[in-house]
Length: 121
Length: 142
Image (cartoon, rainbow over all chains, first blue to last red):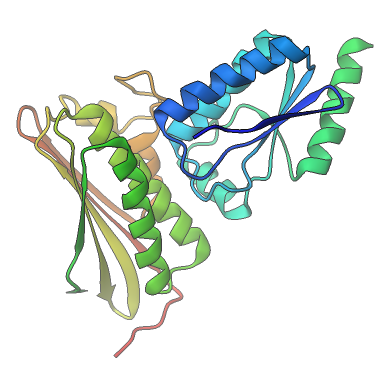
């Protein structure tokens, strides 16, 4: 299963599908890094609107992807977390998601633009 | 506790984790658990099924069933395997402990998400986890 990664105004946008397995996750991380490198994007939005379940495995995939993207100089924002997923994640472990988060795509873009501006200032 | 017949999902391959998770979600919705309880259950099943897949060579089973007690309805998960067992259960229940490079929140996370949690493990014989989540607000069907 190929995860689409789109570029919009210097920012990469991707949405994690509901059933992502180990192999998909590895391919996804490699694709994100290749796209970041090829497009010289300075930001990455990871949308998880489709995800009903973010278990510790998926939390790790998200965190690892963000760390890897950061190494290529991209700022990362996670968005689209469902309220019940947030409740479940807090119960699971407070430190599970170590990524900047925003409510929705709009706010994620605003946040990223601010983060990128601040960094370049 | 009045129990209903369970539904067993064998977990021997990675995609079985998603199947177990879907079965848990469907059962939780059918007995009327709240949305957050449905998500808590689905996440717990995912953690336990991932453990079966990643920590045992042969996989194991997830059995799900509706349970009723004192006017409450809930869902019970039984995760069983004949795998290597857990040498130090106390450590496995501690946050941050991992043997496979994971985040080390799987078992303690499940314990926090569910209302009841029991684990038995014997090295060389296997592991059995029983966990229940109750929906306090649900009404008992006569």
